[in-house]
Length: 224
Length: 224
DNA sequence: CATGATCTCCTTACGTCGTAAGCTTATGCT
DNA sequence: AGCATAAGCTTACGACGTAAGGAGATCATG
Image (cartoon, rainbow over all chains, first blue to last red; front, side, top):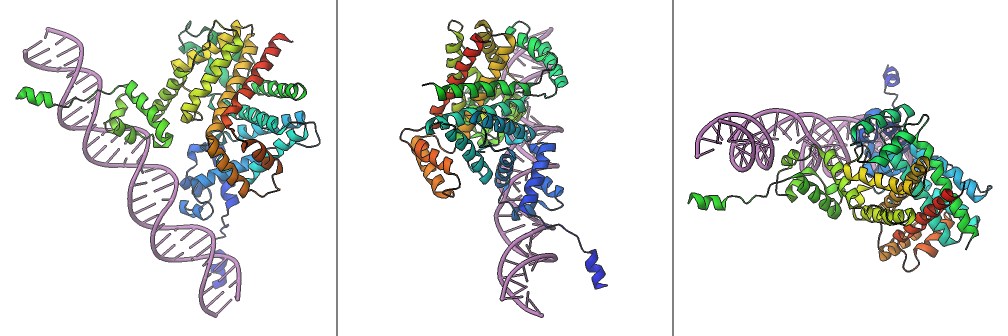
């Protein structure tokens, strides 16, 4: 009887940092970063908000942990491939990760507390460049250029109010209808002749800029 | 005496949207975006928080207005210069603006409600490319690539916990001391041999990536 | 100039947020 | 078995954005 009572006792799953981070990311992905409140996250985990503080120092710590998890999802550059293809693959993987977790782009002070996955990622990217023949200075320049582009692209993609082709078309129509026809002629032209073309998705613009950068880097590496 | 009373009456300056936006930007610049609350902004203007709502629909509207103001600070590309130099100048002016107003980089949904200055800016940039011989599609690609880079660079710059050379050096020292020596060898190398070199400032990395992109675009324009 | 409408600004209040303090209960160690 | 430690809960506080509605100033119209 005592044992029955015990058996009926809550089959509660203990909380831990991993479960907290995992659920936080899932919540931010599906409901948006604004929905990620301590109370809501607690609810999602069947726990009161304040209990989360046993596994996370505060909300910023939670966010830092989430960001490091996103970095851990990025495929590291292979060191068996040429630097250019290795870097290209990891760049696409990087953008994919930011596209799966749009909230990770533009979190305040995201770079101030880099976690282990973040550091490892950076280290491997720089290593790929160095082993590809880049000087320390050129590797630093290249790293800054490529990652700025990826980050900025993800940011723009996120801030766009559409993602699918149909949404794009709808938005573009509204946009065109609302803007003073001849005041922004080039913008209107680009909208009708590019954005409104069948099959357009902003995400498809990504490889263009990436290859622009990688080709240019290759040239710098070979040239003077 | 009635007149004396009248003369002593509050020499109150009327509020208007322009004053609200101007003061909001100044506040965000000096005290950070977190300090920009409706109450604090009201205080700054000698007014109660709720009075602001006569000139601004809500806080998002305030932020949209601020962002459009930042765009209005960017030098538009001259149409008397070659596309490349015109775009280069405007890109540097763009980054300068984002550097003066770091809060403007990464505000949520910044692109969903473009204001008139934003639209004019985009229109002129696209126009510069079109008149420089870019096809509509190539202009769209180029615009996306360059502005993603600028945006991303500003983002990284903001998220870095240092700006001056002295701060960089101090941070780098702490960073090196704290990270597991041989776990991130390339990162360590880059830090000591690049970041810790005298005269280093991350902002100086900007022209490298920009010229990489512009040179590459020039080549695409000429080539196939 | 008078009078009514409209706009500006203020007061009060509500629900939500992150999280400090201190309690109770569960776990782990000796 | 008994106790230290950790995990989770309750309650509460101050700050936030902003809804509702009142008071005073300003403006439009006769």
